[in-house]
Amino acid sequence: MLLSVSCQSDNFLSSSLLQSSNPSFISLKRTKKSFRNIYNKPQSLSLSISCSSLKIVRSPSLDKHVVKQNKIRFVQKLKTLLLSKPKHFLPIHILSKCRAYLCIHKPRSILSMIYRYPTIFELFTIPMPPTPFNATKSGYQLCVRLTPAAKSLAMQELNLKSAISGFLANKLQKLLMLSSHRRLLLSKIVHLGPHLGLSPNFRSRLCNDHPDKFKIVGTSYGMALELVHWDPELAVPLKSPPVNRGLIVDRPLKFKQLNLRKGLNLKRRHRDFLMKFNELPDICPYITSLDDFPKSSLEAEKRACGVVREVLGMMVEKRTLIDHLTHFRKEFGLPNKLRAMIVRHPELFYVSLKGMRDSVFLVEGFDDKGVLLEKDESLVIRDQLMALVAEGKRIRREKRKARINGTILDDCDNNDNVEVEDGDYDDGDYDDGFENLFDSEDSDLEYDFHDDDNESSMLYANGGNAVFWTGDDNGDSEPW
Image (cartoon, rainbow, N blue to C red; front, side):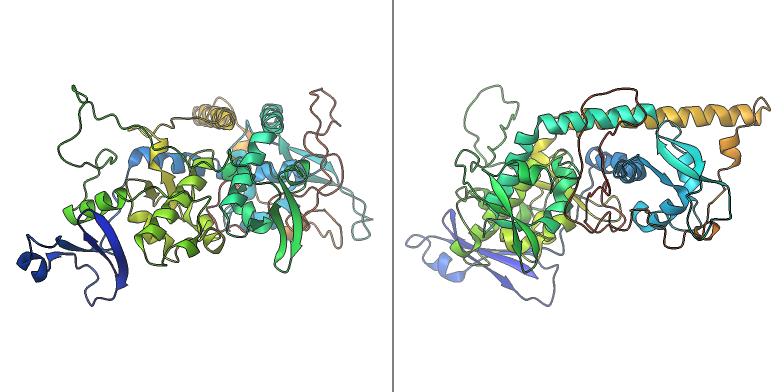
């Protein structure tokens, strides 16, 4: 599949998708007519770029962000499950039903994963609940909960998201303003929720706390969030980042240059295509739609790149999964071959192949060393969580060395391979409240912003079943 671009003088006039028997073919040619009338007519340049021949040049400085998040993926998911319960703990035999969500496949043990993070989770026992199936039995069941340090971080994160609820509402409002019908399904927004920095119960809290911005409506496809007020101050696209070329004398460049990340070298024909693409006038994605341009025109691609750039600019880490963006192709007017378009523009985006699913980064949001230029406050709490995880690894390492030297015998390390199977407990029709965790769209969460030492105080919930994300997980969604 080739993207053929024709231009006269310095402006693109048309573009079309052409079939070719050789997908890796790249051609740059001048028509005979332009040479015959070189002094009478403008020259015509035909440029063909093959999407399939473009290779992704890896950036270790950006890939490390995906690797870092994957290291605490299990911690984030289990923390979400625990905080969704009224008393913030779960029996192990109930937790064993969540192997797919936690990405733990047999024969790996759930207990062995919990023992890896002694500073985040702790185990304890409670009496067996009296049910008709175990009325004659007496015993205890093993449960897991957050440590006081991890619970304190969860409280800080809760207070932060409550304090910036207006800022988070503006993000949702901008997403609705980007959509063609000013309406988005809540089941689709859920996929972007963690990356936007939304709290897990944003559907029942944030969406209802700002009726002047949006409202929840029912559609034939499910519940959706609809725009109520168009804010012209928010309908402003991101400004182009300043380019510092390190010139001694500030004067116009003699030759056109692309602002590419360090270590990225493109073929000449691809570079020429991007230079011509950047010469197109900027298109505001808020006030234009896909119907304003021909489907395969460069203007349509310019607008699609602007939409992806705006969405990534709203993310906490200036990145998300490409699969998450594909959920909004129809609403945002994005092309069917969205990944190919993103790969075609390395000056704007970077595609990381780390993990089971590809991630897309907004290049202008990072410096040459891969450090975020604008660090969100929630990332500070995440760094503190990772520091707790690192402390737990250090503790386990010291205990392992001491056990090898014969100094101590750690019970946790001896039980690393212990697994509580589903069949160990015959709970029958015992309602653990977990089956509805991902089904309902209502929530009865009551926040408690007062930090006290009362064991019965609720951190996130003070009621029955708490409702959180409903997005389906495919092994690499982070962190929910």
